[in-house]
Length: 70
Image (cartoon, rainbow, N blue to C red; front, side):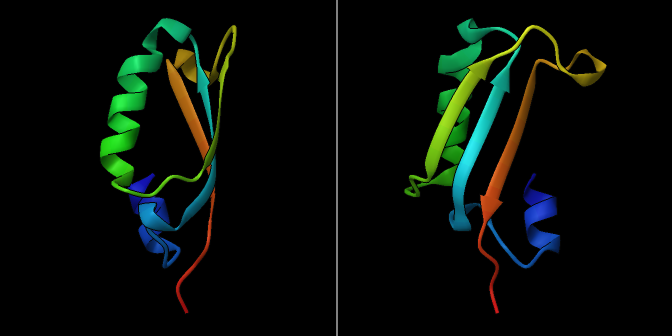
């Protein structure tokens, strides 16, 4: 996700909304810790949803909306 943000002239600090899809909600604490470290002090709006299955049987998928730098 960092590379996509960078190539779009954006960054983790410019995320305004994120949606996290988890295969297992028991992974929430681990994901929350990593998410918090990666975003630093930024606190964008966020939703976290448990889903039955993700493409390619991934355990997590994250989509985000971010602003871009001029």
